[in-house]
Image (tube, rainbow, N blue to C red):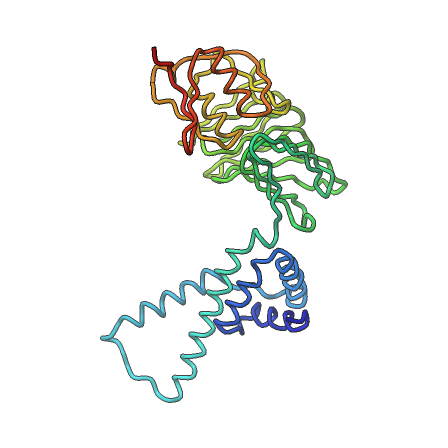
Length: 328
């Protein structure tokens, strides 16, 4: 389609005037990345021409539920007149358009507004954001950043994995916010810290500056240089000031730092770093401990070290690796 035609179609969509077939066409059209950028540009243009627009999603959804609930109340049913039917039809079309707009908006919001910076298994990647902040992504990590530029007075990104941030202080003192899921957020002006956000919990180590850490249920913690924040799946957390910070920064040099570490925890780190599941069937073997600092660019490097140091067998399965005690 011509760009002028797309513009008119999208403006109709933003105003809730499109049909279900047109909305389906837009949804399919948005699966191509260049079109997502065009969508965002037209959305920005449309909103700039209508600054007062602000759909009340909750009210629309509640109205929609009320209509559905009312449709089931046969005892309260009264026949519609010929004059009422067109009005009722327009109400349904309007509600359907609002619900569709909300659904599509939620589905494509991050995809449209943000681009994904990814690092593969065993690979670290360095990025410089548009305002100068340097980010070093650990392996198997993802950072969502604004597709074009930061808007407003908050520079907001989303982290899934682990990364080191060297935040640039801006002339307007714009905050830098890292959202880590589960309502955890880091808020800073200019500082250096390492953030960890994976399935087993959250972790923040502050090297320089100060940060405000937002926790679930609205709690806030202010961190100082040298502070380490650690939380688990159940939401419990603790703040310490470890004398040895290497366990939280060794990954930057592609090294593994073990200090009397359980083999089961080593297996978890391998999974996080290299995207490869490691299983230990023997519970006694899983409780063995290891210490030392080991350079490992590839998963085989670390597995070889474990095999030789701990006298264990590495077995390659179809979809995972198994660590076992050698059979006599």
